[in-house]
Image 1 (cartoon, rainbow, N blue to C red):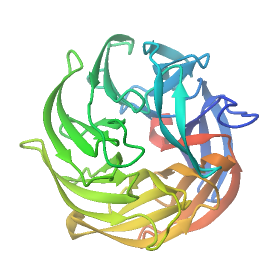
Image 2 (cartoon, rainbow, N blue to C red):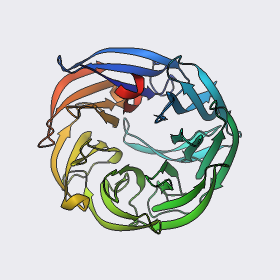
Image 3 (cartoon, rainbow, N blue to C red):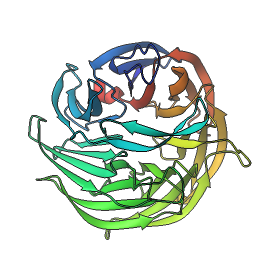
Image 4 (cartoon, rainbow, N blue to C red):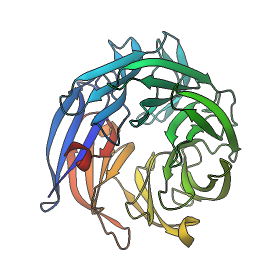
Length: 375
């Protein structure tokens, strides 16, 4: 069987010297050979560092830049690889505290433009949601029936936290919950936000906000489709928190959090991506700095976690990963040494083991399983 993954990342040489990436790619996994056998270009896009695809309609919503001078969002047709519509943000200066893993140094990152760090798509109601880390805002976009962007709204978020990376709210995630509300991560202000969505106008109404522990840095969320538990990735604390969601009220409550790195590790680490296994029995997290994947077993019907494995990704700065459709494999991108690594995954135990090393692909920061989507 051939499983498919979408790969995205940076195309600029400023991120990777002599960068050969041209946009969004399709990686083909031969599940019998247990190897990635082909990586081919799907759509030529400038710096598609994050994207998500639609549940129907074969559309991809992506962040992008234009001439390394403007940042924005676009909708791409997956069958043709052509851009359907795009919208660029006003030329607003962006700056924030960043970390250079190669040099082990913090630095002040200055940008002449701003680009969202996260995007999701509601293909049923034709709405896009984007999180802007640089300008501490949520963006929503309304589309017509042909997926052309027709209107947009911006919602600034105030706040900060105790750590050097938390000088502002730094919004990093915006995606629909199963009940149709929007949940948002404020990495810099240690908060989760819940909003009602007007699907006709793409406007938001606040419902609830949850204060996480100081310095947690909520970055991404993995959502259960079977229970009311969500798993919140804390980039700055290198932890994952179990949070209970009440669909009746929209309220959130933290139950407990768990470390993604070994006890006693003293180097810099930033947890980057989180996934639930297809059967929702295991939570997987990538660690940039410790350069590993943490495997947590889901217990008590989703209410508790237990870390059962920590495995190195054999590369530098593993930012994103995807789990194959059948759950037998995990494909991880090591951003800073331009390689992917493929793991076998035992569906019963949740444990990972290396299947294929040194899969070359420049500046990859987004990995999404897409077999059914691309069929």
